[in-house]
Picture 1 (cartoon, rainbow, N blue to C red):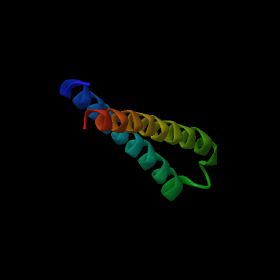
Picture 2: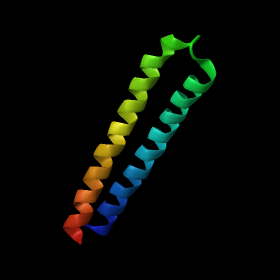
Picture 3: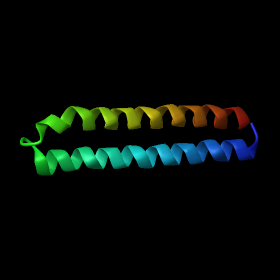
Picture 4: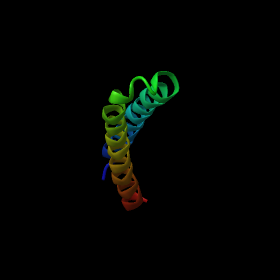
Length: 71
């Protein structure tokens, strides 16, 4: 894998992590500020947070695998 491709994967991981952190922040705000009144929002926000974290994990695993191949 070229350095350029590896940098693109690293950028993808950073973007996925930012998105996961933003989703976690929304979940945190819901828990801290809106529950129990906004309990109806909990499942959707929790699922979005889970999906974002899973996307980060998959991107990170792909990057780590590619990094170990080039090392």
